[in-house]
Amino acid sequence: MNFEILTSLVSSKMPYGKYKDTLICDIPTYYLEWLAREKAFPKGKLGMQLQTMYEIRINGLEELLSPLKKKSI
Image 1 (cartoon, helix red, strand yellow):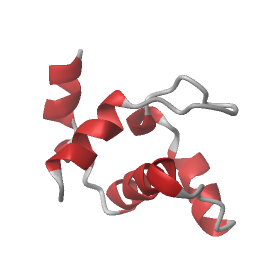
Image 2 (image 1 turned 90 degrees about the horizontal axis):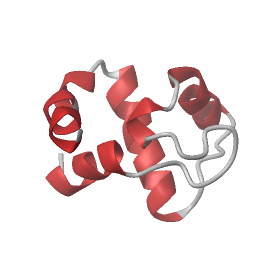
Image 3 (image 1 turned 60 degrees about the vertical axis):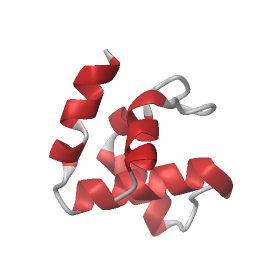
Image 4 (image 1 turned 180 degrees about the vertical axis):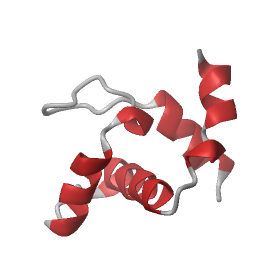
């Protein structure tokens, strides 16, 4: 796992929609599941971040983000 990608998950915010201004790491699981089910991940960096967060959640790896999240506060 790339450290820069993990860092971006705890520092980047959703730029639009219902979860605008929500940190990528705080977007609810059901929304990430919906994006995956509908094959609706956006293109580019945001899509990669959302897909990465989805993979982290479905594999129970949220603890990877805990130390980074504490650092960014």
